[in-house]
Structures are given as C-alpha cells and as structure tokens.
Image (tube, rainbow, N blue to C red; front, side):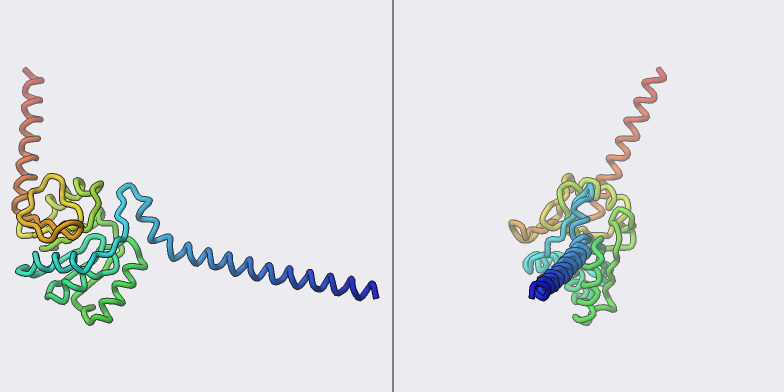
Length: 221
C-alpha cells in the first residue's frame, strides 16, 4: 500500500515537471518570437538620429497631396513607414518610392501596394537615408525629427536637382524658408523649392571659401 502511494506521488511530480517544462518552453518561444517582431521597430530608436514609426494621419496625407497637386514625376518618402504616403502618391500619378529601415514595414508596404493595385508604380527599399543619393527624385516627402533636419538640409541641397520640391511634415527645416505651408498643428506641412535652398547653400559655401582664402592671405602677410 505504501509502495503504491509512493509511486503515485512520484508519477504526479513527474507529470507536473513535464507540464512545467512545456509551459516554460512555450513562454520562452513566445518571448523570442516577440523580440524578433519588435526588434526592427525598436532598433531605429537606438540610433544616433532617431526616426521612429508614427503613422501619418489622414489629414497629413491629404495636405501632402494638396501641395503636390500640380507636380509629377518621381517622388520619395523618407522613412515611409507603412507606405501610406507612397501609395497615395502613386494613385495621383507619381512614380513613388519609400525608404525605410524597418524590414517588417517594407514588406507590409509592398503587400499593401499590391492589394491597392499600385505595385507597378511603387517601390520600397530597406535602406539608410544617409547612404542613398536623392539626385533622381523631383519630389521629396519627409516625416523627420528635429535632430536630423539640419544634416538633411545639407544632403538634399547638395544632391537634389534645382527643379525639385521638398515637403516636410510635423517639423520644418531649421534654416530653409518655405515657399508655402498647408494645414495646422501637427498636420502642418512645409513646402520648399530646391532652386531657393540650393542657391542659399551655394552662397554659404562661397562665403566660407572666401573667408578661408582671406584668412590664408592674412596669415601670409
């Protein structure tokens, strides 16, 4: 009788141990899967210049399309997120591209473009905006953060053609003067003409070169 009871206790403990291992394994697997999904979303926020994914509102999308309504050609959305700006622009006749670091968002954007029937006039790339040239684009849309706008000013001024337009959403560029704005509050968009900011950039470079030449001349006299 005692032996039978002991065996029953041992069997019950063994069963509980197996159940505990299964639960632990399932929980561990769930955490790994959660990390795999969340890591691409979190990683960009750990970079020196943070560009987190915050979906554009319907009003923001409408404002972007409004200020570009007389434009055509190529368009790029820097930090394209779930692709809503790119897809909306493609429906308006643009050959639209999205640049995004998060692969999950890029894959979702491609699927969404296919579902909306604009996959032939859209493209989405997993890339760092600082490692790509913008020389081929005639329209640029950016949902940036203040920490990156001054660096982006220099890059776009150097690379964009003089016929390009730049639309900044949520935050304006620090030194450029917009030719117009649309919307209000967080939905405000600022429109910049490349001819204007490229001329400003050229003049600043000329002044810097003149200053350096003058400093060199003074040092030799």
